Image 1: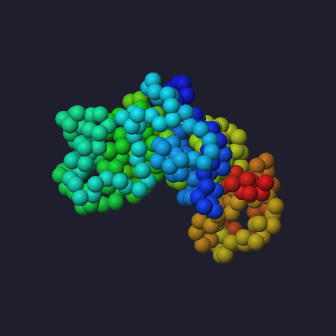
Image 2: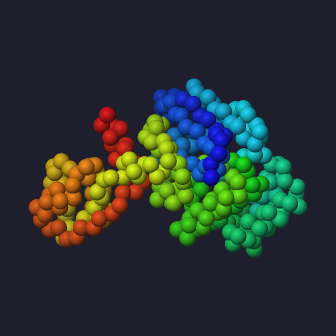
Length: 310
C-alpha cells in the first residue's frame, strides 16, 4: 500500500564528455512502492541511482527526499540500503565480520547485527560459510552476501542495482520473494535491472529508460492496458524463415530470431488476427504458429522503435 511521496526527481541531466547519459529525467516514489528502473545496459540506470545517493552530481535538475521525517537532498545513510551493481565488500574478511561491521555503521548494535546476519545467512543457505572470506565464495554467493549487507538494518528505502546479477534461475525466484518480504516489512524499493521478465513479477510502477531518455513512466498495470494490445506470435518454419517477405508485409512491428528456424513476431497495434493469419498462410514452409501475450520486453522494444521513428 502506497502513501505520501518520499522521493521527487525533477529534470535530471548528466553528460560524460561526449556522452549524454541522462536527458531531463523526472519521476517520483511514494512510501511503500516497488518501483523498477528498467532498460538495457548503458541506458542510464546506474548513473541515476548514483546521483540519488549523491555519489556523483547531476549537471542539472533537483532531488528532494522526504523520508521518516527527514527532508532534503541526501537522507541519513541509516535510512538507506544500497546494493551496488559492482560489489563493494571486503573480500579478504570473513563474511560475518563484514556484515556485522557494515550493519554497525548503519546504527545496529554488534550483537543485534550478528543475530540478524546469521538469520539472513541461514535463509540464503550460507550459514555454514559465515567464517569464510568472501573471496572464497562463488559469484552468486557473493551477490547473496552483498544483498544481506544492503538490507540487514531494515532500511526505510532500499536501492537495489541489478539484484539478480550472478544468480541462477532458482535463486532469482528466491530473491523476488526476499524483495517482496522486505517491502512488506516497510521498506520502499527502487530496483534497477535489464532483466524485465523477473522485474515485472514484483514491480508496481516502472520507469523505462533507453539512451538516457524516458520511454515510459507509470503503473505496470497501465502499460499493459495502453501498449499491450499487440498480437505476438511464435512462428516456426521447416527451413530458413522468409524474413525479407515478412518485413515487406507492412504489419509486423518487430522480428526476433529465437532459434535458426523460429521467429517471434510482434504485429502493429490494431492489426486484426484474421489479417495476420491471411499473411502467414501465404508463406512457404510454415510449420507452427503459437500465440503469446505481450510482455514488458515486447512493449519496451516497441516503444523504443517508435521513439527512434519519431
